[in-house]
Image 1: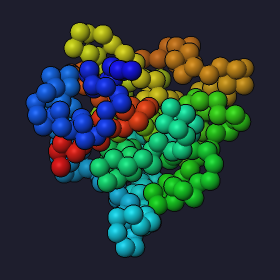
Image 2: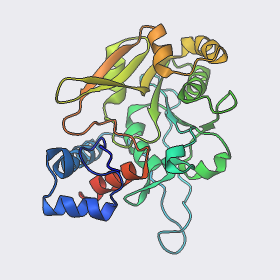
Image 3: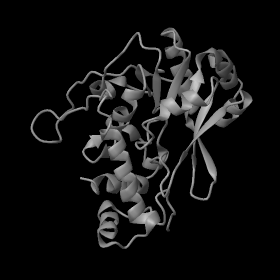
Length: 283
């Protein structure tokens, strides 16, 4: 079965070698190989060109060979800096379409996806925490506080947002930034643009070449003053992020996506192949 992916008309069941082969041979159009290459250039340039940005330390292999364990790293923490919001990475889902496990720990061009997310996120925020369930020791190499859902049975990303709200409120922050743990190419000006768009809930969106706007509700700014409202919403059976945001008159900040959506997320093995191909094309 062929699946039209967010990268254009590529088959989702293509492996990395097949995708890269088509890119190298020029067999893909703008929405295929050129779109991937163009997007990867934008991503890498944006991520590497900010000389004044604080770079997040990347977990490094230890022992003999690249398959050794990860060395412990420490993330920079500005405890008194509330001019930038704290951020929560949402990674508490079950990843059923990937066969289970932690999507954020999947390898992308020699790095865990979580390392790439932190590399983009750390310069934008004051502190970073990870929302994940189960044994937190598997994330020890990243030096992050790991916040589990406060509700049972994996109620979805709103539970992670609530965990982030409670954590941010304890630090005296007015809002917390949320990002998805399976979206490695999000904008490097995410926090800045969302902050300018409103003082309440603000969600990220992307506008395609046809002018159609699609929101991405796991990327947003959330006032910590709404944490009890969210707790009640979840206790009453509410699960939809858009539903809670709509109830509180959320604003939107939109990015132009071009041939590729900057909020491309990895849900399937085919998505992972495409993300790997995009990064390998620039190495």
